[in-house]
Length: 373
Image (tube, rainbow, N blue to C red):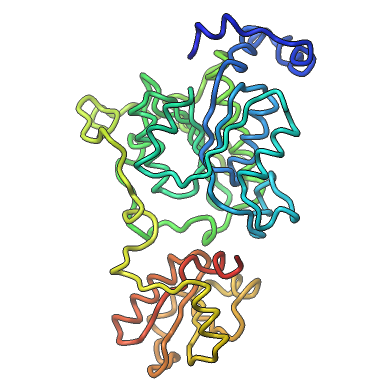
């Protein structure tokens, strides 16, 4: 950490009153609070995980907090992303987050980075901060953050959520493992659904994000025992918490003894959207235009019945993806078909399957999330 700068940091009377409950803890004290004030954290993603993380980092007095976020607030976010309210729908998340954090603590510096993280900017962004908190929700960004943290020697506080389950660990420290020690390569496209398709219990990101913030404060403040070399597994249905040991892999392609990955890799096509040759897409705006003009079109919802019952495009037919192969006889052979799901991954697979069977089929890009936008 930035030890030379810590010695110069002192507190105003306002700060002493604000952070007094920290300073009286023997393990933290004034020295730990000085480290927090002198420290800096980059939070990648201001969604379900980033919401509690950003609020608690600001409240704790971390001196400089960066936010990487390019998305806007959607109604579907409000079930778990506690930074935002109904009045914020349609606004940039980064603007709302910054304003809310300033309300919590005007004494800290908040730096917005309204960009999409990619291989061209990740090293520059990560290298500006002491520590990174991974609040991403896709594998492409997760591997990008991990590799950049290893390359720049910045600790990476990892968190993930899926339905009722969560994980937390600290990666990319000098002696500890990185994310690739756990998962060396990204999964093939479409194998693992995201939260928009699989769902997540609304309070779970709050639980996981709060633990991520705790780990970040411990590392910057120099107290406690961070989750280095340990993976915390959370089952909210129990609830049950358990740890597993996670050793550093000498053969890891990025943090091992002979690394083969020395620069960030763009993983969008490997673990994000399906490649264009595998899925022809239509945007929500184009689909709305076709429907409004009365063009003949068959709308096919490939989600589950519970999803269709909550929100569906008017006039669409429901055939879940798992049943599609056995129900092709229910589809028109003389009309173009537009498939859709929650975020576009299932519908892309459905559209490709249909084209392989001789149908004219496209997938709604971004799924219902894009349609609602």
